[in-house]
Length: 88
Image 1 (cartoon, helix red, strand yellow):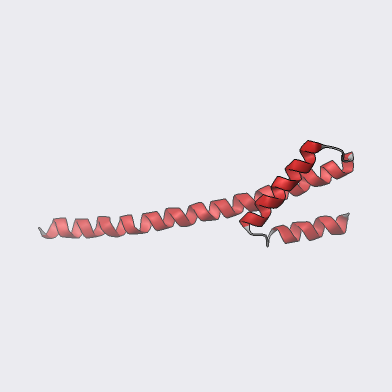
Image 2: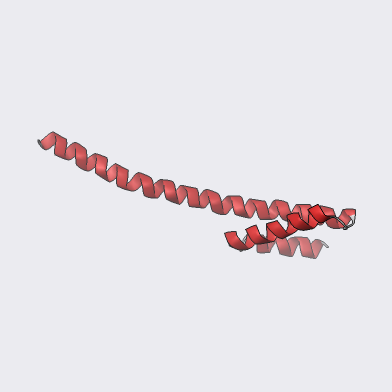
């Protein structure tokens, strides 16, 4: 199991958002349906936590990119507006 844990933790860093989200949905579904041993449930929970971190990382990156994209044009317009206002 240690090899699996190491492999999945390493693979979690290379997953795309959609892949991590889809796998997380499946992990949650398996936990909700039950029928697993305590050890299996704990392994699923740990995998779910890792997948949630991957999703959070992607979403935070997307938010930062959106914020930067929205801030860029606004700054350019403000500077242009200030220059125009100063010249008029």
